Image (cartoon, rainbow, N blue to C red; front, side):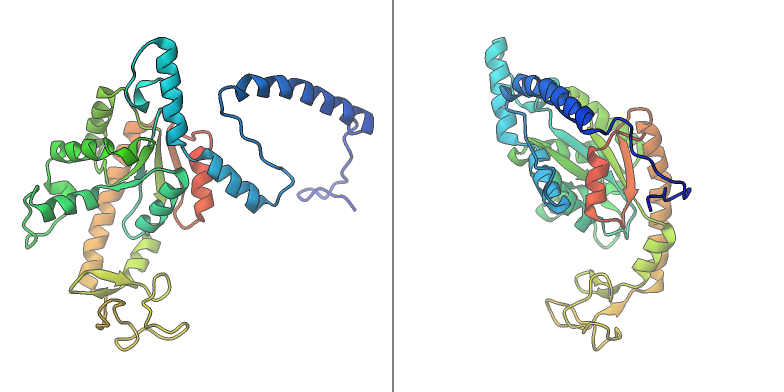
Length: 323
């Protein structure tokens, strides 16, 4: 009754899986583990999980443990400063201890990055820093001049040094002490080089570069299926992000697709807008390959399917580097 799933061949028990041998292996394990834990417990970095709990409970417990503990890291920095007699400011100045998680996220337009990255940032325990939001706020405050009637991607219009100054200021915020998840920058390989240079000035480097991948056909069809509230630019999708007015399993129409906030009718995405999106997607694909070539060989790049559950992204984040 016990056959191999792939070959159908009969299975056999391990010859060393006897009560006597298992007892001996467990004794050896405990003899080695207890001294190891005693060595690390004084450092306050040991956490224990019940392996007999359901996988969901183990996942939740591990997630809580692995979130960067800012307060504990600050305490560890203070301990090192006391021991070495050196006053060290900030987590990034202590090599290998309390170094904050600096993660860059790349992903194609139309892949629902904002929602996925917001959840991922929460899981990691760091803020999501969106270059697009930073630039929009700068335009709104008048810090950056931008003619909205002309249009265009702000990342391509605002000089790189201005964007970097804004990012440096944001990275210096209190909530970024444990690290941050950066989205929207670098947008080009040249920006990736500039970011590296700026991080080197503070003795820092990127921890990970995560790439959310989705087929061009999938994201294009997803965008083509959107309905837009033209006055604000808010968009909905009948299946993925429907408005409250759309009854489940009903057909989308001007009568059933209404903006959640104003109640005004939504309009299907215009084909011209889809063509603009396709051009943006092609540009992203070109730049992505150049950016990844820049980071190649560092062992910090991880890729995963943008349509997979968040848990897969977390596994990719903490797994051994693949590239």
